[in-house]
Length: 129
Image 1 (cartoon, rainbow, N blue to C red):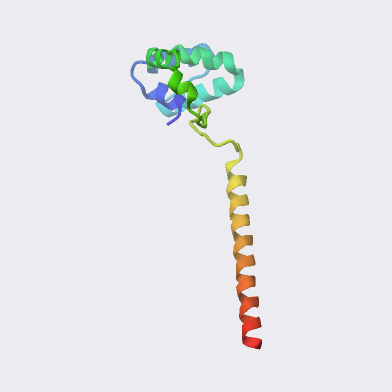
Image 2: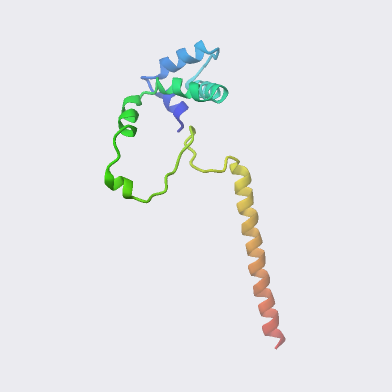
């Protein structure tokens, strides 16, 4: 679930999201369409639109309290990999996932062909002797 769907389906923020979309020229007909309208609005208007959307987020207070808390000394010492998620919840760095999947498949097939060829050559050498 991405942030747009979460906001559109939450009873606390649904009407505010509808009002925002209507004010910006969108006419949502369902919660799913509302999520699409919010996503399109942010895609078209960038960071300012995302900040406007976050003002109506139903968990705004929780998020602000969590992310604005001071970091303890023990947390600073931890060496950890930080993973950022985009607004759809995707944490991968490759935006073209179809191409990445196709590349992974091609690499796997190439590896299988190389290993199979090596095994066949080994059998040929052994059977020749």
